[in-house]
Image 1 (tube, rainbow, N blue to C red):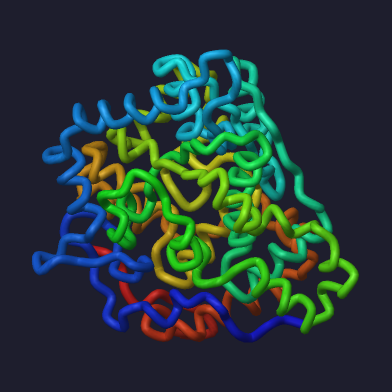
Image 2: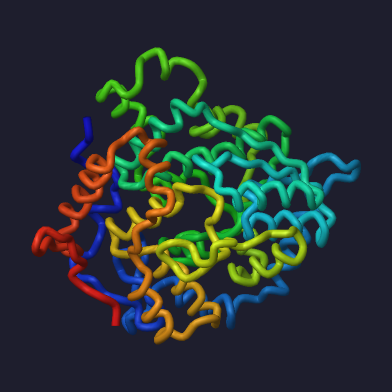
Amino acid sequence: MLFKKTIDIQIKQRPEEVKFCKRCVVSNQRPRITFDKKGICSACNYAYLKHNKIDWEKREKMLQELLNKHRSKNGNYDCIVPSSGGKDSSYVAHQLKYIYNMHPLTVTWAPFIYTDIGLENYLALKDHGFDNILCWPNGILNRKLSRLSFELVGDPWCCFAYAQKCYAFHMAIKFKIPLIFYGENGEIEYGGSIKNINKAFEPVGDWKELYFKGTTVDDLISYGLQSDLFTKKEIKDNSFDFYRLPKFEEMRILDPKMHWFSFYKKWIPKENYYYAKKYVGFESNPEGRSESTYTDYASLDDKTDGFHYYLGFIKFGVGRCTSDAAHEIRNGYLTRKKAVSLVRCYDGEFPEKYFSEFLEYLNITKSEFWEVVNFYRSISSHLWEKKNREWKLKYKIK
């Protein structure tokens, strides 16, 4: 049974008229992004503040004060860094340990299907002096959640987001470490809500709206029961606990907070890559650029990553290349003219390389995959039209 509905609240929030930022290449279809009267997106306006207005010396003092408050004197863990071994989390972990003399515990929620380079980079971080706890979820249940995410949210990666966020808090409770460091505030860096533009830490109450597409793991479980994908026996144990926050009383007592490192340090993804390569042994994609983009240094861990970006392209017309090019414009690595040509060349390229493994992981056929994809096209008539039996985007960036 395939669901012919979506529970992604972002779908109904898309503007009918497609507009592109005058400074970068992102459109107003990206969830929660806003444009000013000059046609400049919120991420570009924040980039201007980041490079010209924010007092980074003051932010550095704030970071020092925070770390001095939590730094261990006996070598015990004093902060948690959720880390895949990717460029960004490697940069954060290395900075905290070797520049600020903290004692981080890195924790990892395993990807759906490791790539070779993703596993190598994960091991490289560990081998450069970091303790790590790697959590593998129940494979049967995680596959079912990913399938439900694919059908109902139009993003097979959504259930990973639940656990990626919540697992760090479970480890914080277990080890009694209230300080957690995430990388960047993606909403303000890449385009989204600016409600937390002046906040150093991430309010957990915002997760459902800003990161989970208006859903929770319990929503998926409910639909899984309706479709008999889950049995009642499967949902009675504690197998889904890591996809939810710890109990309220535990959270109240420890009061853990996940701080954005990007609040304290100017966040530039490409420079994070250079840093991680130099100090942590991080390696880029040995095969060259990743599918649907021109870059080779980001989101390399998981064989299913390409489908997260591809479904974003289907639902919003904003693909992986658009996202990469937009932040490289903001950080001075690309001109808009060059970025436009890259987007027109690569955005929406189908991630063919791991397609068969993706289908096997979700236990669906090719025809079922395209049935779901075309459902999301069909409810996006302002973006897509069908001509001569082929779906085409109605617009192209200029």
